[in-house]
Image (cartoon, rainbow, N blue to C red; front, side):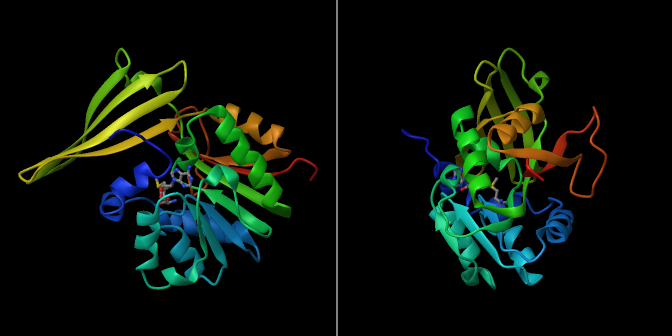
Length: 245
Ligand SMILES: C[S@@+](CC[C@H](N)C(=O)[O-])C[C@H]1O[C@@H](n2cnc3c(N)ncnc32)[C@H](O)[C@@H]1O
């Protein structure tokens, strides 16, 4: 792989994404987002294969999406109802869509796929420009845990099955808040690499980006089912609104 760009993650993982992440709490996410979305429309950044968007649309909510990977969007399109969701293929930092949204969501730490602070802040600013007056921006992300890494690296077991294992092989650069990883699938068919790069941020930095974009934190939870956000939370679901409200 010579170049890793915004589409690389999705292009490589599209064929296995739904299988690998079938155990995520999608129902909790849908209930949470449907409660907050009001009349819509809703925009999902990094809509992927429609794990969240499709069940939301099934509840009668108008859902739009942005994604950088044609292959992920093709998986969405192939599902029932997938062809009715308007999707813009592009970089979500641009939020290059027409109209205003009552809710914009970025789930499953996808905000961290923007690899610099500037790109993440640009995304916040462009989201703010696309929110209706009462609109909400919902960010689901993991809490960074640098203790996972030993001298800047980590090898862990992702999945174990009778005929394959998936290793997670990562390197960590705390100066740039970057983690560059491969999911490495080892099976009798051979070895396959699924790269993923992120720039993580603590909730406080996201809140500051929100402030710079004219937004403020309305609520923060430890998960989609409104678990309390505490020192032992490993995820957060943060809801931002216009600072003037
Ligand atoms: C972890 S998946 C999440 C998909 C879906 N939101 C979900 O929760 O299942 C991240 C998605 O974001 C897309 N993505 C990554 N970087 C992006 C970028 N800069 N702009 C738009 N989409 C991006 C990937 O192609 C992928 O579909």
